[in-house]
Image (tube, rainbow, N blue to C red; front, side):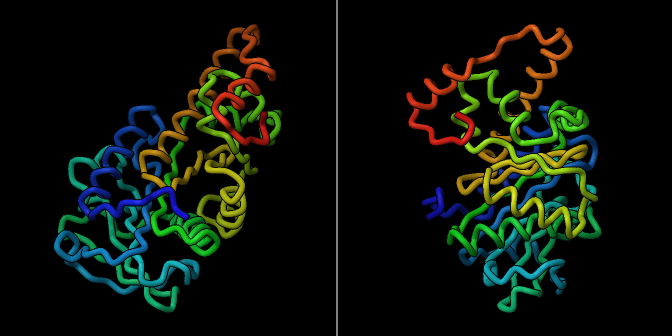
Length: 274
């Protein structure tokens, strides 16, 4: 079952995408046109009043589980910080056809992008996987480029799940609660490639956030776009503490293993990193 129980309207979703884009920008995780957001709505959603222009497209990957649903997606090169002021300029609405291979792209006359995000395949892959396996009817995905997380992935010793999670989850008691399944670390893969998509889909089956080495992160949520951004923010905060500790010569202790276990027990957290 989805975490989401109330079906929001199109305006509410666009507003939340604007809030999410503003917050990603506020933590310096989306320089210029970097980063992208998509939201899947599994119920009938009227989009033509705000997005009257119609274009038939073929999806970069099949998404049969999404057929009949709507995917709101940011356009390639659009600045996430500008969604809030004018969502129609930065967002398109994909109505997925019954064959799961084609879609109708509805957009606004104010549209300022030629095509949807170049990482649409990764977004579609993650939505398809969770809707098909878990039956969720609401699903949000956010890609961002938080600097401290991305920097740590340039250090070879951090490019594995064990090291990254042990180092990052020790800096705040909230971390083991907010990121209970940890961060899945991927090797460097070419952005937008089939290999990137497949690895990311597999990672986000095991966790709610994946780290694309030397590139950025992707986070997901069944609850809201802003919850996905919260996960990015918690992970980036842990990475910032870790960066500070490296700069200080590694003198910080962080939470001890038994202290993390105590927090997890108090908040009934089931985590592989306790």
